[in-house]
Image (cartoon, rainbow, N blue to C red; front, side, top):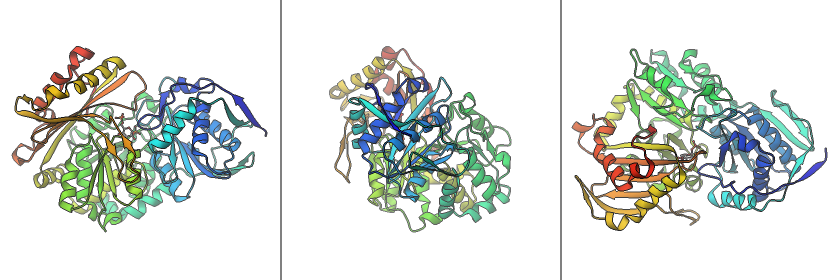
Length: 543
Ligand code: G16
């Protein structure tokens, strides 16, 4: 099995976004497109000969084909051992777990996360480093630089490797080990949570519904919730992973997880509902007729962490992405622990966790996690909630409202305008940026603008600086509007508007978030000239 050296030409659009390279499947299927990017990864990371790599993905369309190519390229590039999930499946947190547990050089994860799949859907690829986390910007930048100058890639000419049975095979001197996709992850969860307490909760008549959205978490949720914790099989819905996610949009939010939302807001709703996304790193938490914002979920988990065995010693610190609400900041203040504000992207949490500065992290984009792995983790968040519920034995809504009564409520919402023409979306951002001098000090209704800036972050561990990470309009009373362009879309541009107001008065905590934020929403439209510039008045998705 000889190494083939294939001549190629660079593609100009292989710049990784918020989380790796995401494009339409058809783009990845173009001759040399995937191969160029994989070779650029291998050239940039310079793994010593004989290194071990983890490979797996969320099972979406093109997963298996891509894995076969990566295995043959890994062998040609001198890797000694590849751990690959059975049938090519590893959820993103499970991949992070496996990278860390077996002390590998890193891993390649194939997923476009919450983006739709199928022949006309999206595909994605990213590299995670030895700590199990997404490659930091200096690595993704090196991959991008390499992708622009690449002239050849290396691949073995060999038949495909069987991935449908556990065990070892050899590919041109490289060991390919097919591992169970679920076991290592489940074992890790058992060390963190009180499974016995959760089992008793479920046996007491407490009803839960988990929506796997026909994506990767189906088998993980069954193994944990049904087989280990005793939930009824019907508690896990849309449990069979499908390459096109059943035609759905596997994004656990109020718009796309509509099957679950209908059940949780319907008559005879279960006590607890949750959903996860395409690759299993996101989560949405619902109570009976009640939605928990991801920002509140993070704050609550931080406040109650000591109830959970894995965190009983307390937490070192917390981190949230800039657009995430400051609810967790208030908890950190009370616990007297540091709270870090990072740019959007899980990769920014890695250094903080590796340095022991933070234990829990979260993002408004339905991501929550801890230093047990280096990815956000959907089922981990679900188990955290179940563990808290098993101890507190109160409805989800009561737990959240008591938290607000204690800390105040950071009323929060995100409005997304999807598939905008890129120039129009960019125009909105540039217009707001150019308006900073006239905005500062301006009085708009009951709000006064204190200051405006372009968020910039200096990593406290390695000193690296990330600029232009979102535009912040900060008001005198602590309210905020943030404008930011998504870095995960594949078609046009997605403009995200994040709105936050602090409400200390418990008598107003019952208000609907859109109502409470009504004036800020209007201000956001006014100062961004959104309608004139994009023709849109209504967001595509509200979370
Ligand atoms: C990725 C990143 C997250 C980020 C999210 C949204 O999540 O890992 O850190 O918050 O994208 O990013 P954006 O606002 O740029 O679209 P995932 O679940 O897509 O991997």
